[in-house]
Length: 304
Length: 220
Image (cartoon, rainbow over all chains, first blue to last red; front, side):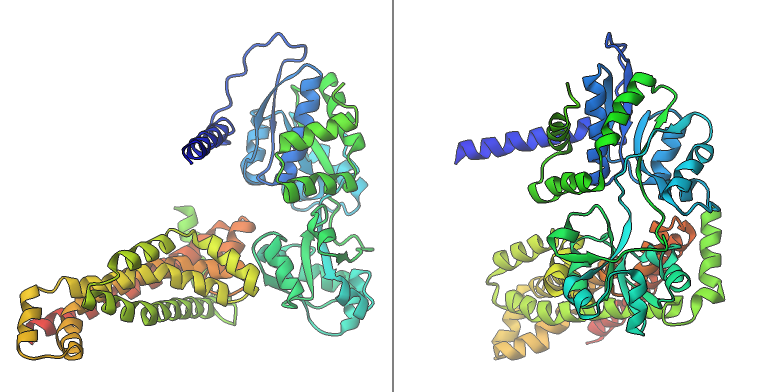
């Protein structure tokens, strides 16, 4: 018993030190002048597990190419980390094309994936640039239960109009204000909708509410493994109501060609299916981003 | 200061006031959730507290278990109960009642425990039954401390009831979450100010109630 307690204490202490070393509020440990080939780069990530996995993919592939990496993960949301990027305190950050563009340019009119990516460099301004986007996307999507889809023969968002009533959508409260929320559903598809707010960003509470019939459809991120594990049907979006969200790395001027090549190599292999599988390892097996990234990069031969 | 004035303007904007999702309706919901949670907690905790205070038994067990319940993170309880029972008012209500019970319970038994033992002895010497002792001596004398317990429970619940919005119920938390997620900080601050306002009003009512009971006790 005693040894078990000792082990627990030790594990706790380890967890604590692990926390303190990745404290997102702490100042980045002074970039030590290293003898490595590429110098030191700081990689950041959002407070979103999937984003951290992508950041770790970049970090480890850069390390394999001789760069020294300082990790600054779990930095809140866009309004927190973007100023840090612009101030040059972070060099590499995985982003999502559509939301980033909408954040930078509220009047952006781009609607297709290509248009969004084309508009990004100008919107980012000086000092930052996007690298080549991955084919992987992680975006809001409307999902229904398989039974509900079958009973009403639903495959696209447009089919919801056939129900001839106000559709209830489970999602975060801000969905009510988003362009792809009720206003967009009405203007693009003629679907009347209202939001049932469940504030866990398409997490288990949202899925429970959907399965309980508290709502007809739920807004869940498309790379969320729970869509498949709960046998949900994602409604297609033929009119591109939801702005495409390709994974795209945003980098500072410190990222040279060798570093950019290392990051591009990751994105070239990162499809949505791969991203869902990476996320599933985190959600179902509780693996850390470092473990998940190492296994994936090794299997793709990117650590050689 | 800028956010502050914008928040006040947001509250006073007639466009935000009316309707089922307006300031008035959400404030009423918030108050209703608070009163309901404190009422349910009182129904559970007051009889239990009196039992513990009157008999002097089970104090350790009751105090430890409710104290432990108090340490439960409320958002965790909301999520957990929500996953079992689904979204709606039940999950946050369970969490709020759990939050309120320890304070009410402590007020109930402490009120009785604080009575001078000589008073109890005197009442028994007069031939009072247990029931008479409880209803005529212990409950009236314990009232100020009980009210204090209910007061602190209410204050905690009114501040935490914003979590109801996390699982689809209403209340002032709706403005809070929406403001947070859409970077509409004036709206967020406005909902926080409204919660503070409701808390202050309830505090004032408790203050009056406590003074009235204190005065009555002195007269009797």
